[in-house]
Image 1 (cartoon, rainbow, N blue to C red):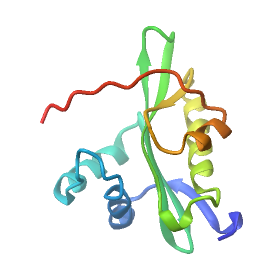
Image 2 (tube, rainbow, N blue to C red):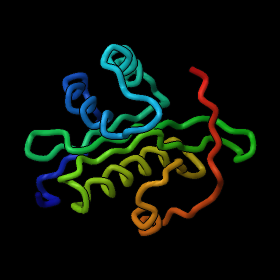
Image 3 (cartoon, rainbow, N blue to C red):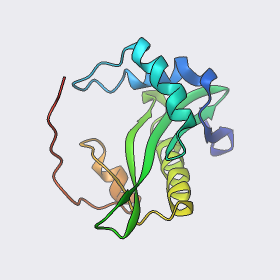
Length: 144
């Protein structure tokens, strides 16, 4: 794949099968279930404070990023949060993740976000190379 073959665009309802397959690669506490996914996807596509991007190469979705902008009190306005970012294993190290993040950053700047943040244990070298810095410890409590 060359960078000319890669298109980053807003995800569409027709991308559901490929995005769902990628979401299942997370292997975290939660295992995505198709019924819940199918309820959430249209809501996310309509949400003006959410951006779901699809990386498309050769007519196939090879990665996606889901992020949000929300208001804060401490940062004097909105900030952006990357909730999910996944690139198909065979498409990694080809600029897909970088392109997804750069498009999300542009969208966040347009929304006047003060910064972009995410919680991840994966690929710290990748995020550092893009100018991200380690900032906090992430805590969570599973409620269901």
